[in-house]
Length: 73
Image (cartoon, rainbow, N blue to C red):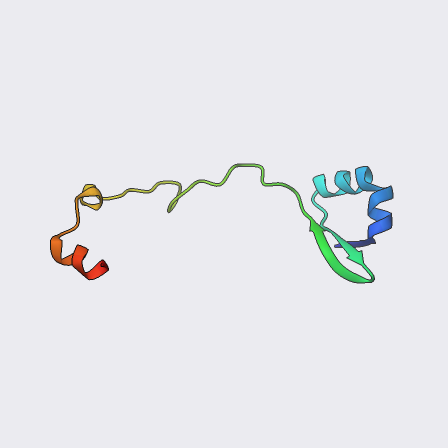
């Protein structure tokens, strides 16, 4: 993991981005303390649900029973 100051990051942003693309993590320091972290972007978009699939039972869309509705009021 490489650490650089904000001013160094401004000056060498293109070079830092190339390093990040190569897999290196870069931490940007402000007043000597970590402020931000540059990491490679995800190559594949995340898939919703468990293992990329999700299923909702058809009963989910049924109207609620009167007793349940009354409990929410």
